[in-house]
Length: 407
Image (cartoon, rainbow, N blue to C red):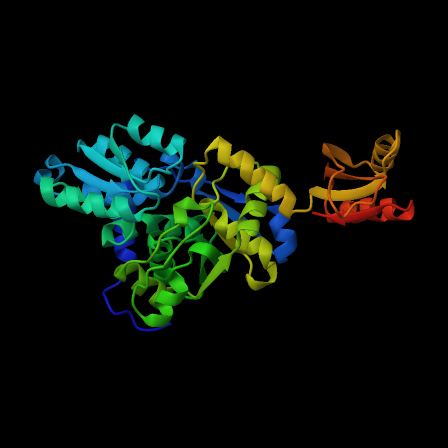
């Protein structure tokens, strides 16, 4: 780890933020995951910030920042830019501290996050397809109106507030060896690292980014924030084009490793949390779990994986669950050639039923040039119990002579 180029948030600063937040934020539970522990070979705990007020950790940093404004600054109002979770945190914190809040959000912001932000009393403007345009608009609004811009991650007060998650982790799991943190702009992992390393420098802190929106690797290599040319991930909450100068300095100076996870791994982790942990999470909030599932041997136990948010659009949840089922081998798509005569489809379905494969859809194709006269291709989508069962289905069809391809 290199020497920081700018002053870092200290342990005492995080402790002061914890005093400020007492009675404001929820001390979220630490839930043991036996399924993850079996993979890692030691205790694994989930820090459930998805159960925090507003559904994510963001209220911690937003409240700390706004509470430390002067009376005159709060009277002028606050403004923020966010894909959703920071927006809700700013809106609620501003309401409780008596400040007017204006929030700029992408046009693609999930409807539940949009509705919640307005429900907390903020004035919301939508523009653009990413966080870039809202950030520019929010800064311009601050300059025109005198409102205070509340940065989503790159401010010492925001980092100190988010770091209170780390203090709770140390208190709830005193023997923790590894803390795994979902990471976008870096405010959460910066704060957690500041808190944890101040008390337990031996604890390993790992940041996890979506592979298709991972700004930290290039920025760390360059030593300055390097914006990504493009991003494409379901994890909108950690889709940040570049870290800030302050969060980059914290990650360079305090974080032990930055890992990335794929979209398939995010989907599988979300499905895992629903099925095994009974937790509703959003893709951005489950990146830490995805990393542990993808490479359990890389994490020294006891492990705490921070589940950072649970604000997921039900429509997106449906898509992600389906994607997760496919990624986990629970959906199987096959094309089977059979004679074009009565009874062929029924015979195929009987074979599938014999191996307990549940048919979700069936489609006939008779017009492709690849088919011989007198042949029909049947496309079937099956629900299976996983990769082993899927292999059993293929073997059973092969034994009775079907020509099968996957699609």
